[in-house]
Length: 174
Image (cartoon, rainbow, N blue to C red; front, side, top):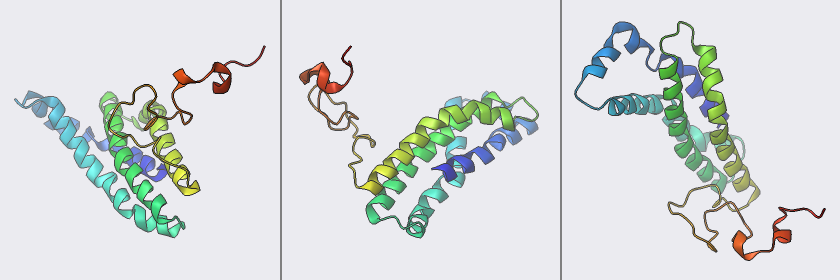
């Protein structure tokens, strides 16, 4: 996940820079297509060049560091989820620092705090898979869980409504 963060971070400064310098970005704004689709297409192209190679190389790198098959699958899944998010967050930072001459350091200061949750998600999921723990709490299941249904939630003891406060460890004895 750290390699994905660094590869995205190194190439973000030039995501919109060349289009801004030669006036292509102004012409894109004037197009009848929605601007968010054009930005999404550029971000997708950025992800294909920076994130997708890491996703494809992850099984080989996983074997090199002696991960088991389940951990390699989880690593590929987290990279497949996390690298597009890194590109999307980075495109916001690149757009914000577009008018500056040397925006590399400011861009890093702006987006690294936003990258930290993605980094925690990726490393936590792979670490849980390596230890043999269930990773269902980290990987979204596509649905919203209701009371009493603890699938896909981080709380592993069940619903908080059904347990006394002392068992949850929220309130210490005073």
